[in-house]
Image (cartoon, rainbow, N blue to C red; front, side, top):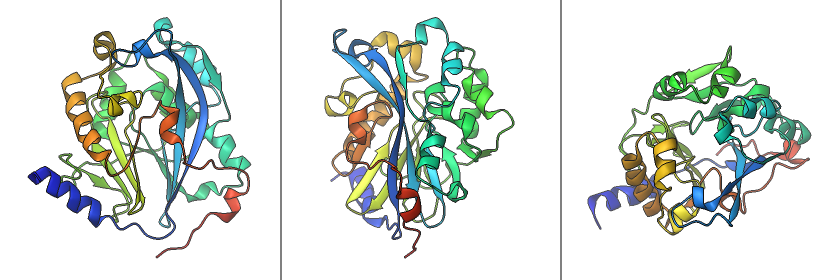
Length: 288
């Protein structure tokens, strides 16, 4: 085993989340994209429904959301995009609506961790009055964008809280930020899609782990088949395609140990429970 493989194995073995860590998916809608634009070798006849799904991570020390999905003003947000970025779409209940329908106590949410600041990951912030956890580099990236102004709209006047990726190398990545200090939610740098993109590794139990990789790959084919985005989409969508390739290799190595969840592939969320009515009153808040 290589040194990086030994370090990865040690990090996997060291994670010790407390009792009560649970995750739920909150799907907020989809938009349609041909597979030919999602990964090399895809077909224009293969129409993929790109998911816009947030994830709720329950933790005794405070819950977090990963991304925010489509918001109450999603139609307006879509109209703010350049015409070539608008796709046929279907809107579902927002994260805010799903939390309320479940009877969930919003006071438990300590923040929304963004994988990155693109519109389809932040739209739902328009109806979530909670801190937004983001890196300084991603804030600089968002400030430079002219074709995607949604983050600036939904974050205006909001509670932005930055964090540093100043923790040790972790799972093959060069740095980390351990949110709770127990290995249950660890944020890793993946600055290829945007310059401040991150991967978020959630450990529910030693035998139940997830890597939420944002837009490192748009579909699971990028992991299972090792296919990249088409050249045109790499040039249009990615800040550093070479960095994407390096980080995809890291994530692919992790796929033997945990579920890899690209933000826009609904198949990645299979088996993650929905936050259905009733869950809001029976969430486990016990500690170790």
